[in-house]
Image (cartoon, rainbow, N blue to C red; front, side):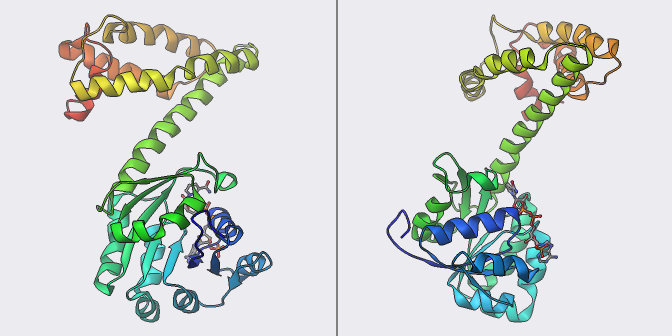
Amino acid sequence: MSSAGTADRISVIGLGLMGASLARTLVRAGHDVTVWNRTHSKAEELATEGATAVDSLVDALEASPVSLWCLLDYQMMAQLMGDPSNSKALRGTTVIPSATGGPADVRLVADILEPLGAAVLDAKIMFFPAQTGESTAELLLSGDQQAFAQHKGLLSDLAGVCRNLGDDVAAASVLYTAVWSYDFASRFAYMEAAALVTASGLDLEDFTKSAALRTAQFPEQNAELSDRFTRNHFDGDQASVDIYAEGVPPMMGAFSAVGLKALLLEGVGRYSDAAEHAGYGQKDVSVIYDMIRSRKL
Ligand SMILES: NC(=O)c1ccc[n+]([C@@H]2O[C@H](COP(=O)([O-])OP(=O)(O)OC[C@H]3O[C@@H](n4cnc5c(N)ncnc54)[C@H](OP(=O)(O)O)[C@@H]3O)[C@@H](O)[C@H]2O)c1
């Protein structure tokens, strides 16, 4: 039985790495799960674990009042939803689309579904397949609020944190983009920096340990940044724009000394130089957020 104590009938459309993990978790939570995948063998695999595998998408859509779509992108969802027999089966149902995409992609699907009287709740997955169902796994959700209230139990079987962003169906895709762009840039910066360490003949373990000490401070420092953004407060005595603008060139020199490029660090230098040229050298570095937001960069 699910964590909410109720079993729902749900169809999972798309059984790639993520879709299969979602379907498996729902089966284990006691839900009545029907599965469909373009390559049928993946549906058969899930059937051995307790799901009902069907051959056609129409059969999957007719089997449950709720469908969770986990395909590569919204364009392919829109194409499948636009097929007349699938659209007919989608009428009056609840659809939870989930793929990487921006607001325009999500609206493409919502524009097909809403005229069919379907409730659309976009779901953005903030975890890897192995973390499905964990208490720290997060789902960002936006769209039909009645659907959210009705299926909260089922959604919390997939992720311990279900963040409801309200009735604008595109909201989850914006927050998803923001959080992953922060994650991507951090991860790539880590790779850039690690390459400097190993190319310079240093021990990677020392870097790993020192970097861990720094990043442990990020949550607190990010909260301080957000507080500055909210209060429009960009004065300070800790780290001025000048410190960054002056600090980046010698750091770039360390990379070029061992024949490496540092594209992310170069970007930091460009932001800092632009802020300095705009006369913000003595401001706290958080002023760069204000420049980006107000389209001065
Ligand atoms: N994996 C992750 O860690 C992760 C994390 C967060 C979000 N996501 C997002 O979740 C979505 C799915 O990711 P995934 O990792 O499951 O990808 P995946 O393993 O590559 O699976 C892709 C799925 O899309 C289906 N598909 C592709 N082209 C299709 C078409 N033309 N018609 C019908 N079905 C089609 C595939 O069917 P076949 O099996 O027949 O090829 C498969 O079920 C993506 O948008 C991804 O960005 C993934």
